[in-house]
Image (cartoon, rainbow, N blue to C red; front, top):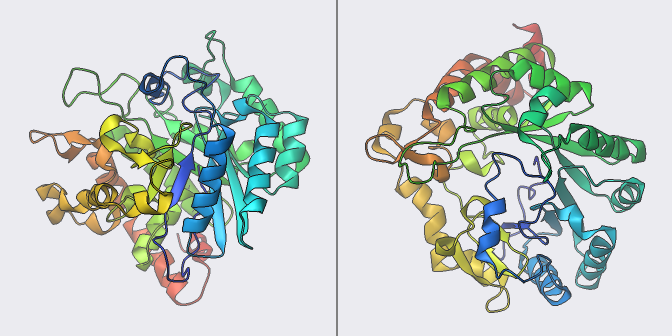
Length: 393
């Protein structure tokens, strides 16, 4: 989701990091055909409840607040499907935040499929200042190709009802769209639909999953690099002519930051990673949301503090490996400054098995936007709105 990221210029102190909390573990009421997280259920004992208990919840809240260097602390509740736990669970979480807040400014974000939202949720989310991310893959005909429930029923109507709850109660929201083989060929249809339903902050995530037992191959739901590049460039061309300053697309915001020469807020294209960990319902902490596996379990908050786990040798090496293991071909690439090799999770292609599966798409996209980004960056440096680029095209 397009989350509230830590503010720049936070006071010096403990190592700043972000944690994606999964209080319901991998549990979910949907069975999206591209979901990689449902399979994480096998990491945990079969009869163990998929629910972060009160002791673990309090330890997480306390340790996370203590570990943050600035006055602002952002909790990100994700899943699985976090709303399965019910409103009362999050009332307790907020009570714990107040108990251990130490005068900090605490904010909360919730990433949800939206199907369980009702007026009680709406009142709670609005009353406590939540920012909500809604997972939606475009219009119903595209969304329902991939996002079905456990009984293989479409979910789009329920998602839209949940979205209407947020709008009715004035809850700020953004949208997260997974770009898969099902919707990659319809970029403008997806983009225009998201605007039509009221989204003004959009995040697109490419679906890339390796095919089991087939090195270098991907699942049928995955996008190719070419598809990803075409999807982004098609939307960019419409956005840069009509929507700059009105619609915020995380990839485009990141790109402008790169051309201006300041760090972007998306880990995928940062030089290194490792500052966005994940905590599961049992208190286990993992290097990243996309690396929830035994190899990348850095410990438990019941054994060591979050602050210690975030700066430990294992996590430090994980973050630095992104640049240290950059494929040789990347060093000769003209868009390395913007791309930084993409997510390491996608580096499994090519003869050496280290090439990013989406490389072709990233190179095509960053090359395509170069001229417009240079214009917007120049406007920004002169103290003018980058939105003026629309009158220059």
